[in-house]
Image (cartoon, rainbow, N blue to C red; front, side):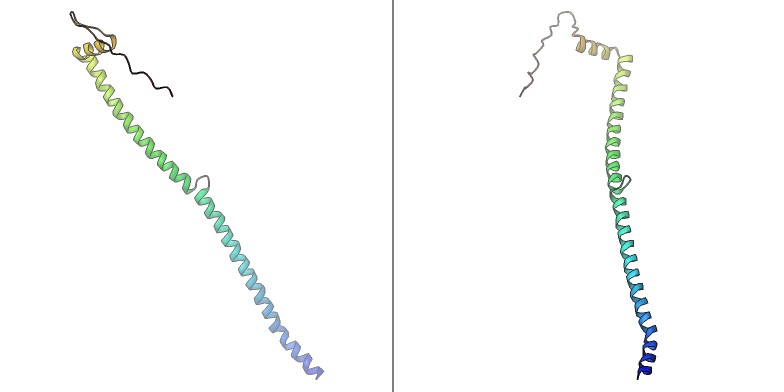
Length: 123
């Protein structure tokens, strides 16, 4: 029987080796899958929260919209001021109105009444 057991053990050795090989392969595959998953999480975090991530991109987009709105308001103000300058350069009535308003000029017989300004609330 000793010889039969010896032959049976030798025959089982490749089966055991295959089982060990499959377990090691399974562990390596699980470790590689875990490593790739961890790498994907780190890269995903960088894409969302990094220096050039989505949160920074969205913040810059909002800032660009705010600056665009501000630029449009300033362009409107510039057009208004250009029109005012044009009137002051070409319209004597506009010059008279500006001088009367800023310098308190009056015509003969006119009286200017100046009202006190509202006091500032100091709290």
